[in-house]
Image 1 (cartoon, rainbow, N blue to C red):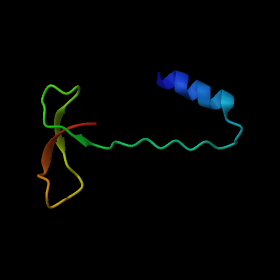
Image 2 (image 1 turned 90 degrees about the vertical axis):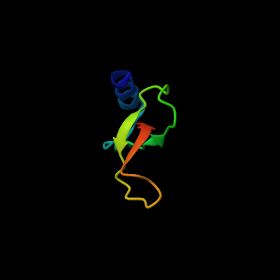
Image 3 (image 1 turned 60 degrees about the vertical axis):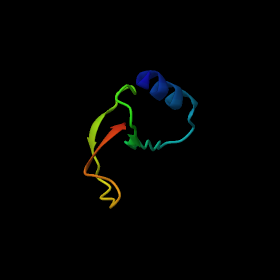
Length: 57
């Protein structure tokens, strides 16, 4: 899917430089049944969250 996306962008973009930003935003989940739900290290240093949270990336 990633190869097809890059191919699509390169064939349709009319720019010399293309910037691609990939985010690794963590979506908090409370169910262990959620797809790819795992224990993640919370890097945000938020006071209301523990250091490790159950989430989906």
